[in-house]
Length: 84
Image (cartoon, rainbow, N blue to C red):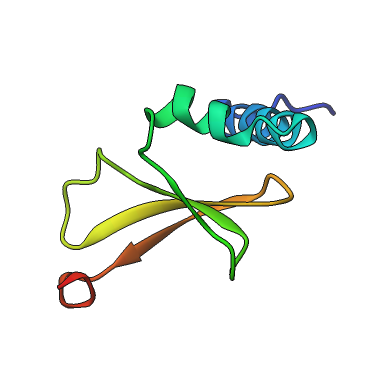
Protein backbone atom coordinates (compact mmCIF):
# COMPACT_ATOMS: atom_id res chain seq x y z
CA UNK A 1 0.00 0.00 0.00
CA UNK A 2 1.43 3.36 -1.04
CA UNK A 3 0.84 6.43 1.11
CA UNK A 4 1.21 9.97 -0.10
CA UNK A 5 3.54 12.22 1.87
CA UNK A 6 1.90 14.68 4.22
CA UNK A 7 1.90 18.34 3.11
CA UNK A 8 4.38 19.18 5.88
CA UNK A 9 6.74 16.38 4.83
CA UNK A 10 6.48 17.46 1.19
CA UNK A 11 7.33 21.08 2.09
CA UNK A 12 10.27 19.89 4.20
CA UNK A 13 11.64 17.78 1.35
CA UNK A 14 11.17 20.65 -1.11
CA UNK A 15 12.94 23.09 1.24
CA UNK A 16 15.85 20.68 1.72
CA UNK A 17 16.23 20.24 -2.06
CA UNK A 18 16.21 24.02 -2.54
CA UNK A 19 18.85 24.47 0.19
CA UNK A 20 21.02 21.75 -1.35
CA UNK A 21 20.70 23.40 -4.77
CA UNK A 22 21.70 26.77 -3.30
CA UNK A 23 24.66 25.18 -1.51
CA UNK A 24 25.83 23.43 -4.68
CA UNK A 25 25.76 26.62 -6.72
CA UNK A 26 27.23 28.90 -4.05
CA UNK A 27 23.96 30.79 -3.91
CA UNK A 28 23.01 30.25 -0.27
CA UNK A 29 23.17 33.98 0.64
CA UNK A 30 20.90 34.88 -2.28
CA UNK A 31 18.53 32.02 -1.41
CA UNK A 32 18.25 33.15 2.21
CA UNK A 33 17.85 36.80 1.18
CA UNK A 34 14.98 35.82 -1.14
CA UNK A 35 13.32 33.60 1.44
CA UNK A 36 13.75 35.62 4.65
CA UNK A 37 14.78 39.10 3.51
CA UNK A 38 18.14 40.70 2.84
CA UNK A 39 20.38 40.60 5.87
CA UNK A 40 17.86 38.71 8.03
CA UNK A 41 20.25 35.79 8.56
CA UNK A 42 23.78 35.17 9.78
CA UNK A 43 26.32 32.38 9.38
CA UNK A 44 27.99 30.72 12.38
CA UNK A 45 31.36 29.44 11.07
CA UNK A 46 32.05 27.43 14.23
CA UNK A 47 28.81 25.44 14.01
CA UNK A 48 28.63 25.75 10.20
CA UNK A 49 25.00 26.84 10.40
CA UNK A 50 22.99 29.61 8.83
CA UNK A 51 20.87 31.16 11.58
CA UNK A 52 17.60 32.94 10.80
CA UNK A 53 15.32 34.45 13.45
CA UNK A 54 11.71 33.25 13.23
CA UNK A 55 9.86 36.55 12.93
CA UNK A 56 6.49 34.82 13.34
CA UNK A 57 7.29 33.42 16.82
CA UNK A 58 5.08 35.13 19.40
CA UNK A 59 5.75 32.99 22.46
CA UNK A 60 8.27 33.51 25.23
CA UNK A 61 11.92 33.70 24.24
CA UNK A 62 13.15 33.68 20.65
CA UNK A 63 13.11 31.00 17.98
CA UNK A 64 15.60 30.49 15.18
CA UNK A 65 15.82 28.37 12.06
CA UNK A 66 19.21 26.65 11.93
CA UNK A 67 20.21 25.39 8.48
CA UNK A 68 23.17 23.08 8.08
CA UNK A 69 25.61 22.51 5.23
CA UNK A 70 23.78 19.33 4.19
CA UNK A 71 20.43 21.07 3.80
CA UNK A 72 19.09 19.64 7.04
CA UNK A 73 17.52 22.15 9.38
CA UNK A 74 16.04 22.42 12.83
CA UNK A 75 14.43 25.06 14.98
CA UNK A 76 15.99 26.27 18.22
CA UNK A 77 14.35 28.25 21.02
CA UNK A 78 16.14 30.42 23.55
CA UNK A 79 14.38 31.28 26.78
CA UNK A 80 13.90 34.96 27.68
CA UNK A 81 16.67 34.82 30.28
CA UNK A 82 19.13 33.50 27.65
CA UNK A 83 18.31 36.41 25.34
CA UNK A 84 19.03 39.21 27.79
